[in-house]
Amino acid sequence: MTTENVNCLIIGSGPAGYTAAIYASRAGMKPVLYQGAQPGGQLTITTEVDNFPGYPEGVQGPQMMMDFEAQARRFGTDIRYGVVTAVDFSGYPHKAIVDDQHEITANVVIISTGASAKWLGLPSEMRLNGHGVSACAVCDGFFFRGQDVAIVGAGDTAAEEASYLANLCRKVYMIVRRDEMRASKFMQNRVKSLPNVEILWNTETQEVLGDNEVVGARVKNAVTGEERILDVKGFFVAIGHKPNTDLFKSYLDMDESGYLLTEKGSTRTNIPGVFACGDVQDTIYRQAVTAAGTGCMAALDAERFLAMKEMELHEVQTA
Ligand code: NDP
Image 1 (tube, rainbow, N blue to C red):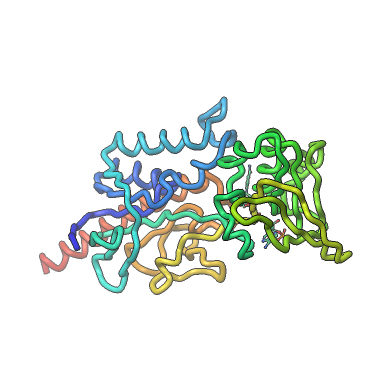
Image 2 (cartoon, rainbow, N blue to C red):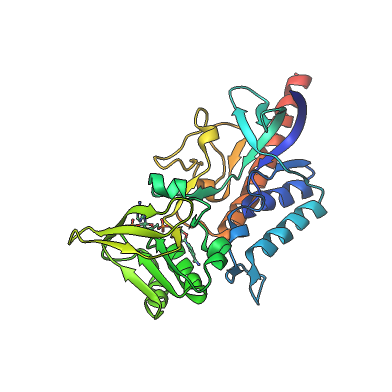
């Protein structure tokens, strides 16, 4: 195991992590940022982003994340490939292990690990994952051009992805478990207006069919009990996300869904010197711009923490 001491460790590379990196670098905190398993985070699997201020013509998600990264590099952030596989916040400085082989001690840690797609939990869904089952229409919709597909979910993501798929595919079944959608009225109206989208209300997926690739899906209407086989080649799941916080379970306070809890109006967690920003602590807004905003807050909070630490040390030395 190799060891290294850094001043500021940032875990995660979405809008929150990179914004924290930009601010921390400019404040002379010499941040080291580990990108995690999905460099750039969830925006790298999106297409058009039209609601991030400063891009009047819109921007592709992956391009936006390259812009964030370039800006952080410009101010000297040490950006590295690698996944933090363990942490120890029981003492000070804080410890993190990268890829099970490199130990880092850090004076401050900024957590921006984001959230990951949720799955239905069906064995057939897991088995066929990557063979027709996907949680990202934007990444994989292309493979089903001109074919029939299904998408599960009724939030903004599902509505957005159903519209995206409708552009590419012949027919899109949208599988909604209740008799209404959670998506915003605008998104609902959009998806309902598409002639090749059929919404299946009160419907649950029983099984994704196929041995080596998806050949259909068996669904059941929860009200009538009627079962039906959908003749689809692609099966998309868009039922929300889970915060990436398993790593921090022994140390950090979380809500019942696993989102990190921060002190009101700040990014401070229950452990001094550990800060959380972006989707990992946001159950409400979950937007790129709000993630970036809290990334800025985390760097400023961390800077203040380091200044306090230095003052304490100075007082001890001069006492
Ligand atoms: P949401 O949590 O908003 O919605 C998840 C959906 O999946 C719900 O309709 C839920 O059903 C359904 N669902 C959950 N579990 C299951 C299951 N086991 N079987 C079937 N259906 C299930 O997640 P989203 O990812 O859609 O959105 C997250 C946030 O991001 C929201 O705040 C959203 O507004 C925002 N967003 C904004 C966008 C934009 O502004 N352009 C685009 C995309 C997302 P039920 O309703 O019955 O609980």
